[in-house]
Amino acid sequence: MKKIILAISAFIIAVAASPQQPKTPGIMKEGKTGYFQNTIMKDIRAVDESALPAKTEKRFQADLSGMTCPNKISFYQKEWHLPPVSQGNSNTCWCFSTTSFFESEVNRLTGQEIKLSEMYTVYWEYVERAKRFVSERGNSAFSEGSEANAVIRDFKKYGIVPKEVYTGMNPAVNSIHMKRCSKNSSIIWIM
Image (tube, rainbow, N blue to C red; front, side, top):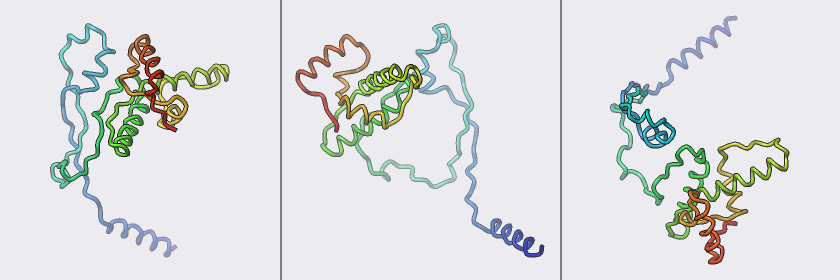
């Protein structure tokens, strides 16, 4: 019994004596609604709600004022990337983020700056899901969202095109561009 009490006491003393990291104090801040609420959700809100004044919300924020953190961009190595693109409420972040990665990789490997079409990949992903849904007679998931590996799989099967060729906005216009693109063979194939 003495050994157990001695072991527990030693453990408590060791834990108490170990160096503790300083706790970062948190604060609640009031602020106006931001980009997500005022830009992305704008299309979802009812028309009469747009006449209401902007709401303020309380958010939890870490107070880092007493800490020394790298806070200058010059401390970091910059890598090329295109400006971030909002996926809105399309639930296609999986494709936007992975496509952005490939755009940066194309630039790193070739020096070319190219904007690829996220919606081209999303279109083919949903075509593949529809095929699977029918072949499995409704026993597979057919919902929004996916993962980064779907982008690579669709690139291998259907290729990828620049955004100006397929924006995903107007099917009639995009089909004409796709026909021209296939005739000029400017589709980028990734194997």
